[in-house]
Image 1 (tube, protein in one colour):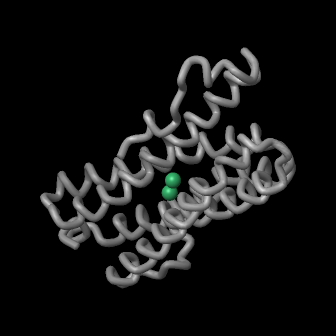
Image 2: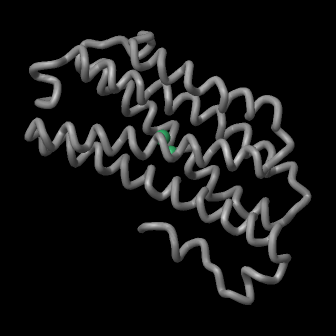
Image 3: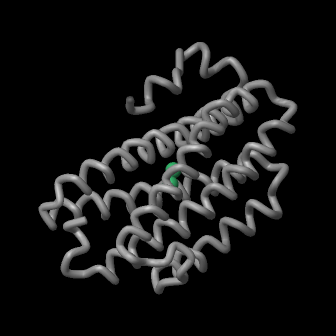
Length: 186
Ligand SMILES: [Fe+2]
Ligand SMILES: [Fe+2]
């Protein structure tokens, strides 16, 4: 990875940060999937299939990061400076996941915070690969960023729909032909 030629330790630190983050994201998705399955609301359960897919993507992304860290001679279990920071920051989210397990709205709220930071983290890596002139790493990172963009768009739309139903009532979204898929990038 040309990106890591002059600054291997820092790049490993950044990748370990993303890895710590992705692992905690998988745990949050698991909690959400559990809550969705138990939900009495059919519309809420409609989110399940896509959420499950996104959970698998987060897991695959974590595996991919483990591979890249090992390729660079790093330890994918290492608690690097940024990995520790990501873990400390995730504590609030994990607290919500644990204590608000029955509240889908709270869990989606937490997921939105996570996916927003996740997107920014992947954007940073893409920009760094670009600055290093590492076209191959950039393409690989962009693939993950595209997935992360879809995750963010999906949770944003799910929250929007829920809020619209709460504020304006059941039939509003249908009347106004709101379509989640239309907002989610390909
Ligand atoms: Fe992610
Ligand atoms: Fe994500």
